[in-house]
Length: 240
Image 1 (cartoon, rainbow, N blue to C red):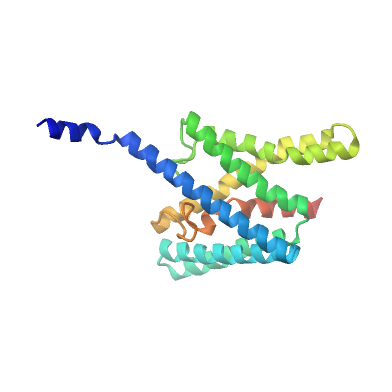
Image 2: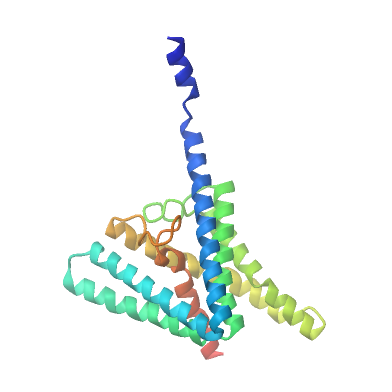
């Protein structure tokens, strides 16, 4: 009887199991991110800007094939499938072409805003919690996380403020205004891309777009926010 009670006392609680799983997942995610970054740096070091173009093209192709998989799983209607595939090809292909054509500062903006927005959205969402934005589409997305993501979007553009101010010798108020407006807006656009993919995964009945990246899911899971952000920046730059 005492042995049974002792065994029962040693069983971890549900909260402990969840915490262990979260830490394990974060470790795997960090390791995967480090490997991907190392590969990108190695390719860029070996091939220069051309290597960056190759990376964008490969990632775009993988995202498209994962999107294709989601569309096929989401509907049996042939017309809907064809329309979705065509729209997806334009959506991802346009973003890839824009990223390849970007100057370095705009490429940085597209990637950094999404990375910072995701990071701070996770921090704020975890620490604060609160009401969900679209619980039936993405249960983990909260309004607190959105605010954190917008703050992260602003922080992502602060290096551009610093560089502009160093060049001018004074605080560049125009750069500051752009960062204060564009950073949060682009963070919201990144969230919209994330929610779109979450909705599509719900329709397809899957958790991830693939299992190519341990701890992250698929490439579309990781770059769903970069795609619309790149398109928006590209349109603004072309109109400016």
